[in-house]
Length: 327
Ligand SMILES: Cc1ncc(C[n+]2csc(CCOP(=O)(O)OP(=O)(O)O)c2C)c(N)n1
Ligand SMILES: [Mg+2]
Image (cartoon, rainbow, N blue to C red; front, top):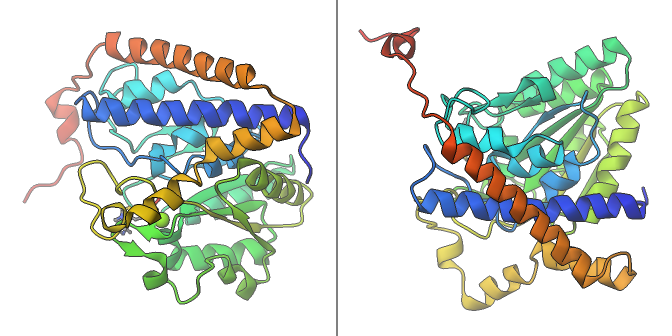
């Protein structure tokens, strides 16, 4: 589905914000300013932006864990100060600073991950079923990595979504890696979307480094779902520039790549690709892009000030012990 110039500008704005916010998270992790840990999204920021920018507030979204969903959340219109305050262990965080990164924004219909990859497939079927009953054209954007498609529940979800023609988009952010394992080791076929064929679900493979290409496929899938035509599977082929999470050695990834492989990856950097397209097509100038970046950096200054100045969460010990069983 062809994008309008306004749609392309929205994607560009969110892509630059995603790049800068992910950098901020990486920096703050290294500065010891985050509780928990962080799964950096460098190289993989375009899929989440493309999947989330054109959702309605009423649509359900489960973000992928890379970047702890930051690319998806900022694109759906969530104020990132509550995300950062949560990661900083502050009472102003979206879960009052109790969650590290297993949090949700239910008021925005954004549901974050549990500790289990692929957790979101079963709830997605439930949300899709509910959306179909309501008949208000809501969709479910179900984002996950290549790694989660080994889960049995992913296959059950594909089956039920297609049988019941549920408005679900199975959005696979395939970076070719699951921590230390490659997708080639984990799956018998190179394209995860080949799973969809077995269930008769229409699918598309897109260049996950090109935010516009991914967004076109998402808009088509969203339109199909809203029209009652059932699920779509989108596989965005993307990259992981950094280690799996900060602090974990990158045993079979980045550290083992040759200089040439590093250079080839860096050449697929999503903002550079989008910038080239925007300038060539002539709907943005270099100063426009610089203004977008300045605006993103100003937003980050405010977001960090909010998180830093908020009060530390100190839940009472009795609350922490609730529901904990120690034999
Ligand atoms: C059920 C389950 N098994 C294993 C893990 C450990 N784990 C955390 S992230 C991850 C890799 C996920 O890979 P993928 O879904 O491709 O996302 P990526 O991290 O590559 O973006 C694994 C195996 C887990 N959290 N849950
Ligand atoms: Mg992966």
